[in-house]
Image 1 (spheres, rainbow, N blue to C red):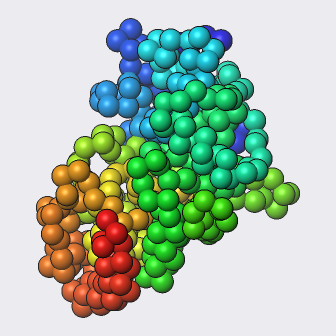
Image 2 (image 1 turned 120 degrees about the vertical axis):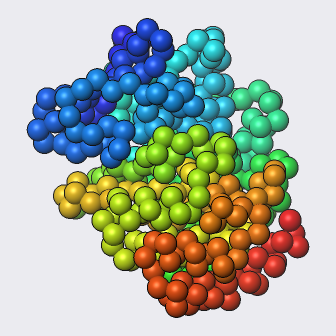
Length: 375
């Protein structure tokens, strides 16, 4: 494998080529065929034109955000590094192109990378309690019994919480320092969000002998096709679209609403959907509302972006006690005034803003109070 170059593919079509520059940034260029028949895989950063694109920011390790979205976050990175160390590979010397090659076709979304390491194979989820214990042993820096298998189960996953994946489902486990019934809370939050008119994926609470159950969510980047196979969908986080460092507060809901209006072509239902999510995060005390927790799906047939189903909705506080995404520049204690200001600037009427906010506040009040006491 050429460690300085990778091909990017989408549904068996070659999109373009990634290559490392002399200053260790990862350049990208579309193929002529994709320029004729494809779409911009990143709507602002990578317009559909013949050019060599080089990222200016470094917070994605020299990658554009669209490709960084294919890489795992903290939990998946930990598993990838354990797998590499098991093969006596120095992880400090493994660059982003090699990591994308390791992910190959197993990443979230529709983009794949070739030549791939082919380390991933579909795995069956057997004893979830044993998997949960294995995850805790990994977080406690204990030895792994089968690093390759654990990487195959979750090495391409996003987020920080321990989890395992199949082609259709993601199953989350509590970290050692968390309440064992964290999954029960996340299920309650997702059910409440659905009652608030927020589009959510199918969720389940899987049985356990050690806790109240493990939270499982159906993947929205994979859907069954008419031929029985799973169809992959192009999905991008807001962090990737806007090239934002999601680890730092860098966003206001004004920007999220504006982005929704632009990408979704000012469709009213999409704007109101984002407004509902903002209200839910405020009233249900979900302050970990960073830029990787809002995503958009692209429909190639319709040439249309839409909000993805909501995810990662739980009672949460940041270490500095404020929303990661501010509400009309207020991250500490936003309320009706700030919510309405964001909605009205996005073109919603004042009465509609208040109506939706009051509806969601009434629906979430008992939920927030229950988990605030536990927190």
